[in-house]
Amino acid sequence: MSLILYVDRNRISPYTLSAFVALSEKQLPFAVRDVDLDAGAARRPPFGTLSLTQRVPAIEHAGFILTESNAIADYLDDAFAAPDYPSVLPRDMRQRARARQVQAWLRSDLLALRNERDSTVVFHPPRAAPAPLSPAAQAAAAKLLQIAGELVHGEHLFGAWSIADTDLALMLLRLIKSGAPVPPALRDYALAQWQRPAVQQWLAKVPQPS
Image (cartoon, rainbow, N blue to C red; front, side, top):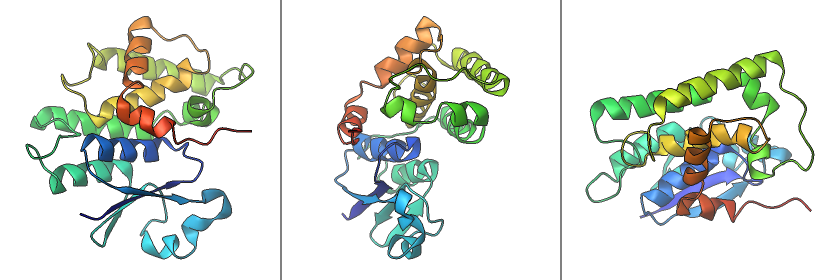
């Protein structure tokens, strides 16, 4: 087996985290290689010619290169299928579709919130109170809490853990880590998801600012 995960050198991308957790939860051996996005390495050889979209995360499996974390999760569940390997998406057809819906929504909506509370706030909590959210970001935060409240009814979204849990928890942590009010049930859910060993393994690799 030959698996390589390409990640941002600063390791603060929510999508590289998602791919790392998916690989780890599959219990697959893999190597991690850093890409210096700040230096433009994603657009230059060797990575720029290796990756079709010149984005991280990317996985390399036996010569096949794939980007986009949700596509990576799908591929891993197909290439390393249950019951031989743990699933990272629900095995029930409708729950699997719902998990994909949650993933796609988190990646395509809530733009104002993602801009004003970018992932840095999750991996490097601010030392001072951040600026108040704009009206657009407040509306996005309210939408996030409303939909998350409809989704979360226990330890995991779909009975057993799935990668959608990690993705949703990270979005909620944009609010939690910046001191915004979050209902206790959602706060407890997100913080519990953040304690999964695969997430903690990633956090241990995040470079800390000097």
